[in-house]
Amino acid sequence: MKEDESVGLDLKSLKILETALKELNSGFQTLEPFESVSVDLARLEAVMLEVAGRMKDNFPYFHPLYAGQMLKPPHPAARLAYMLSLYINPNNHALDGGRASSRMEKEAVAEIAAMFGWNEFLGHLTGGGTMANLEALWVAGQLNPGKLIVASTQAHYTHERLSKVLGLPFRSVAADSFGQMDPDALRKILDSETVGTVVATIGTTATGAADPLPELIRLQEIYAFRIHADTAYGGYFTLVENLAPATRAVYERLPAVDSIVVDPHKHGMQPYGCGCVLFRDPAVGKFYKHDSPYTYFSSDELHLGEISLECSRPGASAVALWATQRLLPPVRHGDFAGLLEKGRQAAIEFYNYLESNPRFITAFPPELDIVIWAPRAGSVSEASHRSRKIFEETGCRNLHLALAELPCRFFDLNAAGMEQDRETITCLRSVLMKPEHLDWLGRIREILDESVDYIISKE
Image (cartoon, rainbow, N blue to C red; front, side, top):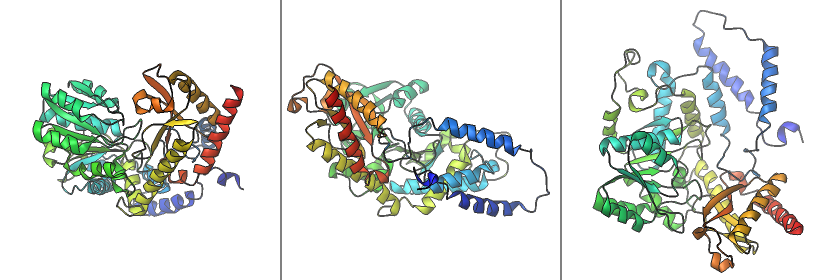
């Protein structure tokens, strides 16, 4: 096997980039010739080889044996389109800085909004999920000044942090034994305080749990708060067919929320720096209104900078997303949805294997593609210690898992005969978000079994 084919780093598609660059260059042949800043190619090559050497100090995020954190390689279409765009380096803050890429952003974002059943909306790309959530909470604060923001204890920590940045009060709501927001706990807060916005997390970063959106919408009808759906991780799963009925019921109610965040740089197979925020009511654009002495004189069209808190934004992100969605449209029953379904199926089969293995104890079944489990032991402390050993040993064998510190109530410790001597348990976590994970489950199980056998033999 050739070296460049042995681990999956793609070199063949670079020929397509060269062809596309020639086509791009042909659009500027009427310009007067000039000499760009000269580059010493020998020195450039030396620096690039040094960069490659430094970058070897990484986990193999692109490989199916990396089954730890939520890291997914960009699709070749995204990677090539991003690189191609960098030769122009458009800025999607204003049409002056990115005419083509701004149009591509609007088209790509409209396709994402259509996933949630929205044809009329306001939305744009952002530098990531954090910035997208900041905008959603900022608009919420403009509409409900000073009112409380609430989110589950399993929601991303960014919501509490961003609420502080915005000067808005924040309160955590208890999660149930399935990692979902507890509606009864929320109701107690609603009865005692004026809540402006409830953040519904659809795909928590720890376990992939989806908050009970149908129940939250019923409470909204009584208490009149906004619902912001943080689907940064789970948004694209609205396209898949192999969800459990209760989870599907959550996604069916997404069109009713007030705002949505989704991260194309997760399941959308984009390079990092690509989030998306959507508002159901386009009228919220009034809060972004501003004047600029120099940016908006070339067109009467709406500039993306007029509906965004960010100023300069990479047009390359929009070009990459547009190209990927052109190749793999984000629609149900399409090829893209099929890739997501493979990851979901991998999680189901991996969970079933762990649940039937007497050496492990599982948490609740995966709602999306994240699986949580721990080694069976006499106590939570002992299991936590053994989790770290498994994490280290599988890593030595090139299977990369992740550790998570989660509430013990996520596990049935009584059934497992484990003493609860701690409130939380250090458990193992796998994000099976690559479609290749389904075909590699046999090897993943084999390495995991070998690692546990070795650890037991040394105890």
